[in-house]
Image (cartoon, rainbow, N blue to C red; front, side, top):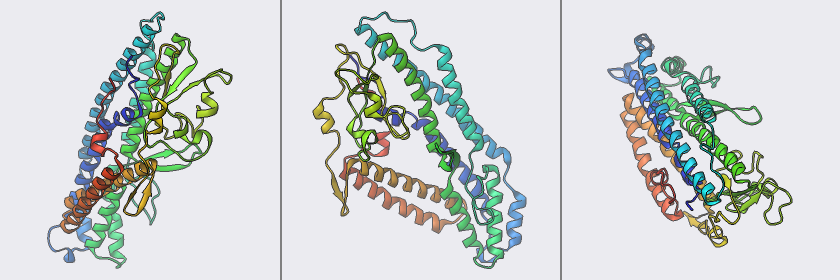
Length: 397
């Protein structure tokens, strides 16, 4: 019997191609905007009139709109291919399980209407994201709202002009400050947490979340329909290295991953998936930031994916790096932090170079090289795969 295809590491990698398209868009917009901040001549001779001349030249709206439209179109095409593959793999896996359980197999497990509804919803999420994303740029000393890409050029020029007129800094300092602010922001999306609090999220992160939500909704529909067809109330929970190992009860995901549970509270052999794993809770199984999934288990037919020994050895032992100790969970968080910092300095390098700030661009490039060395050393010490390797989609046999 083949293994359930959508294990946590696979799910992590699936949205990457769509997210990379939006990272490319972010780089392209930074280049388009910052390249128009170049002023010929000596920077110490630049006046406020020079900035007004830049503003008058402006940035063609169609350039921005074309970049966003092209990327969104490519992303939707990639999304469709991905969702089609998820449907096909689910159908194939559950066909095999149903055959093995000797249960009458339906023509389809999940209706075309349900699949298309999930597809449309995910399309809508990406389209909405592409139309509402922007840069977090100061206005009156604070970020009031996201600035649409087409307006970002004018907003940072306004800020630069205000800084120069205050007499506090020179033009070159004002432009460097504006470019750095734009790059450090990157493209963002306004989101709201479960308590309704507003937060700004990097667009590529929001894209990954939207795509993964669509995938998980499809997987959930197949899980529900196949469990009903198989007549089972048992579910196996997936497992991964570096699972959350703090908190109590179901908050500690490492304590319950990789095992079989029942929907019932009174099953004679298997514990309750609600009481132990917190299914349906924001900090439990399939809750916020949880990478685990459940899939039907048929006693006497299904084979557990993990032995007790494999679960005990799923994490590497705690290790020390540069005089600090890390558990595997802590190492995973630290590795992601380094990846985000590298991405930040790459945005700076692109933006500085486009604006003609060569010294600053070279300094950002040097910082990237140092961060990459740290990243390689840390990944090797922790035994964690680096991002390029981690994002490869390799399904289990």
